[in-house]
Image (cartoon, rainbow over all chains, first blue to last red; front, top):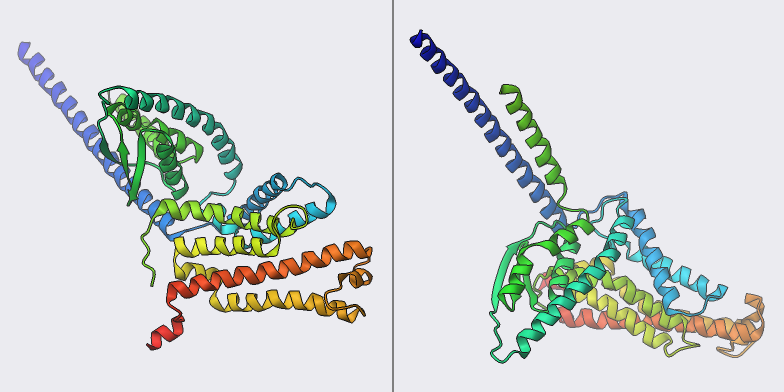
Length: 240
Length: 153
């Protein structure tokens, strides 16, 4: 009787071990597939940035967006809103938008410009708030008698994907007192920070997350992660 | 030859600024009557925007957009517009650059015709000045040697 129970327990444990092995192999396969997918996506994005790739359909969208922005700038500059000057403004904006439409909005996916502009406008008050806080911290550092600064250089690889978001992040870091972006070499930011607190604030990555939210980047990988994890959980639940 | 270090921040910001600089230049040209400005000033600002592209993008990309031949033609085109409007006034039995006589062509009163005539020659001046500024910087950056001559040397 006990031997039967023992044999049955051994059999159950072997089956459990077999299931665990199968699941581990499945997990490893998914991990390999995710890594190779991510790497190929990353390579394609970097190549697109440096080769200046641009979709053909977005030419008209870029032209219209540039025209609207330039005409708004003209209306702001010239206080005269009579028909003659407005017509001049339309002609000038049209000519410049036609000649430089691939300059202002390069690397933007079709249909995204309105959302990006709205999100950019809501990002700026947060940036001003961060500048104010960092200002007070640097003033405290500079005015205290022993000046507790701890200058350090931070290198980090950013998850952002296009040149305009890199430049936005670099400018936001430089505008915030206490940190200065020294260089961007091959996708790696080299930032000089004044003290440990400022460096820690930078390393949390909140600014990077917000900028990725503005330009709608670095979000497709997360969806893929969720889908694969759900599949793994489904398999484990079925096997158990 | 100017040696250029690749810098993505400077390159991106300059490409975003160039349309706004050019629009400001055209604003300066068009509002020469009402505010400080006119043809020469606007032309210099236009030329400066193209020099910005030349400095940050390099000789090959900048001349890909506006080649040296185009720049030479634009210089002459600006002067042609200026002198052409003057000659047009001669055809309408006025003096050289007597814009009042253009009122018959444009169907406006003579005062308005003078205003539009001045706007026309300021545009010509602006184009010529832009082209000359840009070509000066191109000559500085290449040492006066055109690409086809450089291959022969």
